[in-house]
Image 1: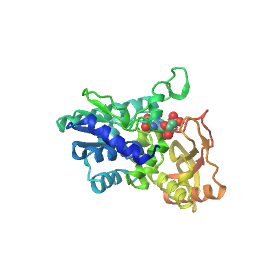
Image 2: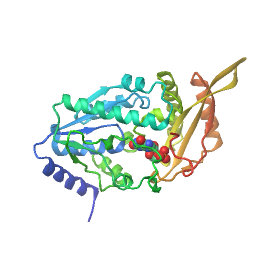
Image 3: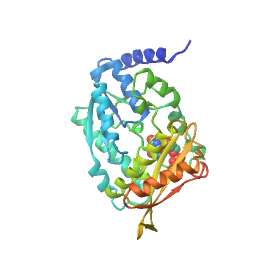
Image 4: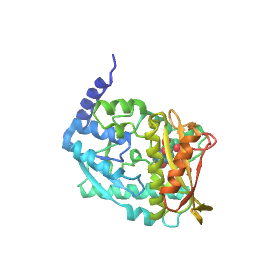
Length: 319
Ligand code: XMP
C-alpha cells in the first residue's frame, strides 16, 4: 500500500538512478514546490545539487532571509543567493501593462538564472518542482480555448536553455500531496504550509508602474494583513491572502488634518487548485480591526477595501 514515506524513498532511488554522478541545478523561490523538490533531491544526491535563488526584489517582507537561513543553514544545501532586485526594478520602471510586466520579469529571471548557472560551470540536469496540475495546465490553462489569460512565470518553468535534462520528482503529485511530502522531509511548516505566491511577486499586486517606495508600502500592508490572519488562526483555512496597492489616491482625515494618500485592497480566497476561488468570509470585526491597523501603521495609506470578487469572473491576482 502506498505511503508518502514509500514515495519519498522510491523517488530518491529514481533521482539517483537518473542523475548518477551528474550535477544538478535547481531554481529555488521559497515556495512550497521548489522547496520540496530541492530538499528531496538533496537527500538523494547531496552536494551534487546546487540551488540558485534569484531574488527579484519583489518578495514579501523577510522571505529572502528565510530562504537563505532555511536551505543553507538548516538543510546545508549549496545555495547561490543572487540579489538582482536593482536589475528587475530598474527594468520595470514605467511599465504599466500587466503582460509586459510578467514577460519582463520572466525574461530577466531566465537571464540571471543562466548567468549564475554558467558561473557554476553549467550542470547536467535542471531540477524543477513541476506538479501534476502544471503538467495538465500547460496543455490547457484556465480551460479556455487557447486564450492566454496571464503568461505564467514560475521558477518551475525555466526553459532548459543549456540543453539540460529535467529532473521533476513531483510531477505525479498534487499540491496537498507535496505538502505531505514536505512534512515527511522535515521542511518547516512556515514553508510547507505557505500560501501560493506568484512568480512575478509583488509586481503584479501593484497595478500601474512599480517602484521601490510602492513595494515597501505594499510589504508593510501585506505583513499586517497576514499577521492578523495568523493571530485569528485563519491562515490554514485560506488558500491565499494578500494585499494590493492601488494606483489611486483618496482623501481622508487623520487627527485634525486632511490626508491624500493611497488606497489598498485586501484579497483572501478559498480554493482547491487556484482555478476557481471563493471570497473568504471574514467577519466585519476582523476587517475593521485590520483596516484600522493598516491606516494607523502604514504611512501613505489612508483607505482599505476588501475585494469580494470570486473567480471567475475575477482572477485571484489583480494582474
Ligand atoms: P490567477 O490570478 O490566474 O491565479 O487566478 C491563479 C493562481 O496562480 C498564481 N499565479 C502564479 N503563479 N507564476 C506562478 O507561479 C505566475 O506567474 C502566477 N500568476 C498567478 C496565483 O497566485 C494563484 O494562486
